[in-house]
Image (cartoon, rainbow, N blue to C red):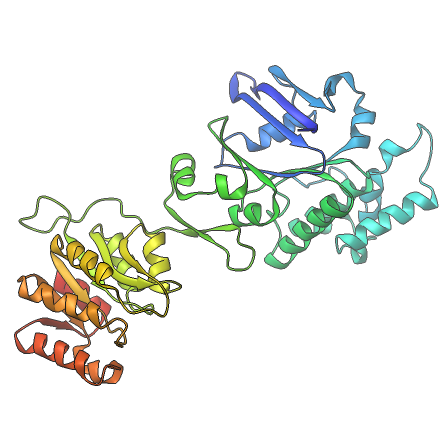
Length: 420
């Protein structure tokens, strides 16, 4: 890899507190790399070390294979621009004056800004949507406005490398996307190399070519967004339970708050989690699966087709189910596998799913559970004829089960109460 900026076995910290423990990182020319990790993991410390704001205790930071401390601060500022997390300015300069400070490394010792410098500053203000603020005092702005002005100042340096420390932290959602689109556009059209500390995992996954996940001062994962942002890595590094799905448009991973239980549900007279099997489809099982998993039950599901919302939720929750191709009837093999899963279930639930000839065997599997004397609960059985598309066969099966004493429930909450 043709590295533009590199950290080599960097140890760094503050006074006697070590924060970074031998981090190594390469950022290639024209690459957009995101640094992610929990609070206190060392993300900002790493960026400060790479920007010359914090000298490493040991190890090296290099720009084009040269130790950055062998390069003058002025020359380094011509190549590398920084947008810090703290955007407060000591003196009450105007916005235009702050942005023109970005031209300082390009000016001679006693030179003043030319019309060319003013034009570049104005262009950077336009790009960041802050041109209307140019005459305002910088400290009279909101945090989000100051953040965009600091981005304009960094761009005014005309850098080859841009170091960003949580550039969207003070911005509302529209400006978050505008700033990230701006940086990504410069990265693609001008070959700007970008290294950004990002708090939002979904923004990081959407915009970055590569991610570096840091935990406890060390690199815990490095690679493409798909390789780094996984349920397992987030559980290990952040200590959080999440779902990681693939965005339907970008196909990048995105993170949703998880529903994993903290402890297993143990009903009376059970020495293991109760196994609840949910037979559904068409999105009818999704809320039941989520609530059961959250409560700590062992949960499985029935035969689910491709693209079914229940199948997506089952996969996100690591719930075992029987896969079936879209627009096909349940095969004998799938039905046999379904019956085998039901054998180990303590409770079987039939949701208020619409029944056609393609999924009629799911109802047959529930009737088999009744014959095996398992606890079976049917959601809204009185409405079966409204969702029966089998010329009455599904209604006959459901009504037969109800007639012999199978329990019914009128809502998801009723289902949970019946189980507990």
